[in-house]
Length: 238
Ligand code: RET
Image (cartoon, rainbow, N blue to C red; front, side):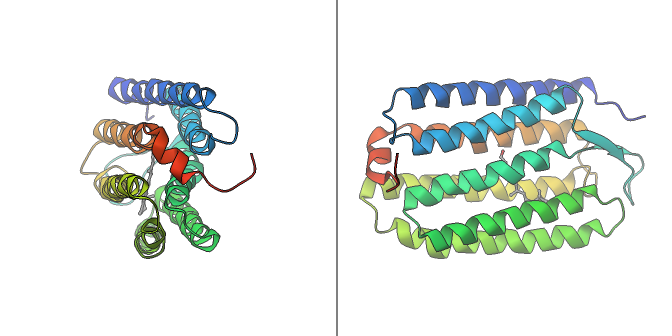
């Protein structure tokens, strides 16, 4: 019987508390803004809030089941709760970035649509015990590259029309996102879902750290300058 080790548990609790504190901070920051001026705060709050739910479930030893994968010595826990988290939160992170850039609705649909396809195919890769998982992995990677291309080609183009302070913040966040997000498929290959070079303890720890940077770190960077948010406010009804 596979049981999450104490290292795994420790990191899942670090993830839960980190996400909860992030969500709380974004909520407080939102409360200090006028209604209609809180688009980015609201989206970013839900990113951290949804991740808190997923991490809490995993810390409470839920949201997983053991899988004995082809090519690996023993069964390992498969944390499917991660994919539920990513399915909702990665589109929200991209929405933050796209609204900051002032991207067209069409570009936003492309970006988010490709992203949910990437996570859905990634889920099939994770849940498959046989070597067929590598087919799903490859499909997910192709969609990931496609999504990054939309980000570079369409969203970046829109960002170039923004005032300099918005453009500068967009560039920082886009670079952070592109680098951090690329670590996910690499960790997947090295971790228990892929080749099993890194054990479940190291995998859960690394995911917790990059998840916190990708959500809470990204959120603080986005929300830290009110002038930037003011200048980038989406033109939607309050
Ligand atoms: C998987 C495996 C299949 C191939 C690819 C992946 C990419 C995942 C990404 C996840 C990003 C998650 C974030 C979470 C924040 O907390 C599904 C690992 C390409 C890019 C940003």
